[in-house]
Length: 120
Image (cartoon, one colour):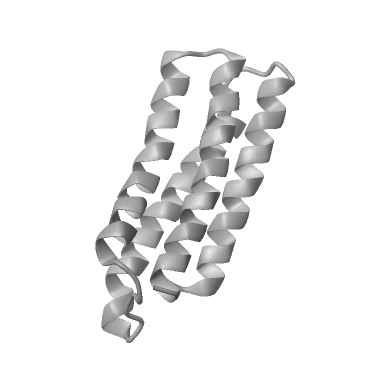
């Protein structure tokens, strides 16, 4: 994994999480801002998949358990998609709050992926 990209994804996930929690607790229903920010986080995680595929060939192999890393990464890619599907099914402010919780959980998951990749 690339350290600066990992930090950028964690920062993005934290910003999206706080934004969605603030919007949801303020009573706002899903909008382009909340759903778009979650979609941007999903795209960043898809880019992380590409980085994880290329990194071992570029001389940056994982130090930890590869199966555990990939299970975290696959789950992390699926969570934003599930959150967006939930928003379209339940158009209340609580779905925006749920997106915020998912984004904060993704920040923790990306940090754990970094630990698995670098520390072993």
